[in-house]
Image (cartoon, rainbow, N blue to C red; front, side):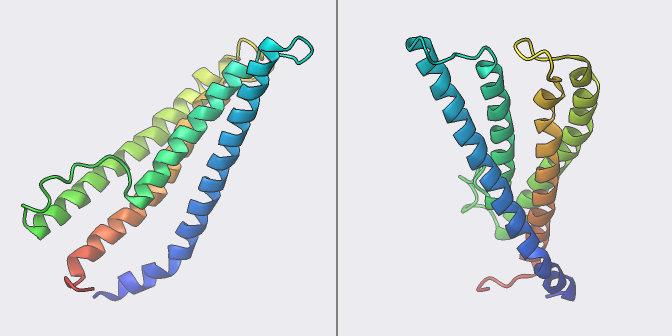
Length: 173
C-alpha cells in the first residue's frame, strides 16, 4: 500500500474530532428546538406563560442548521441514502469505481453549496430580516447551506481518500 495512505491516516483524529463537534452541535440545536417549541405550545394554552412571536421562525432556522449538518455526518458514516441493491452482483472493482464517482459527485455538490450558499447568505440574506425579529438579518437563515457545504467537503475528502485506499487494500484487510 502506498506510503501516502499511512501518512493521511494520521489526520483521522481531526476528522473524528470534527464529527464529535458537529454531532454535539446538532444535539444542542435539537435541545433548543424542543425547548422553544415546548415554550411556544405551553404559552398558547397557559395565559401567564408568554408565546413569543419569534418562536416559529427561530425553530425553523435551527432545524435547517441541524438538518444540513446531520446530512454531513451521514456522509462520514456512509449512512446516507445509497443504492446498494446490485452491489453483490457487480464486480467488486466496478462497485469501488461507482463509490468513488458518487463521492466525487457529492464533493461537487458541496462546492456548489459553499459558493452559491454564500452568495445567497451574503447577498439576499444580508438585506432581509426576519418578520418577527426585524433586528436579526436573514443571513442566518441562508448561512447553514455554506456551513454544511464546508462540512460535506471535508468529510467527502475523507470518503474519497478511503475510496482510493480501497483500490490498494487486499480483500482480507
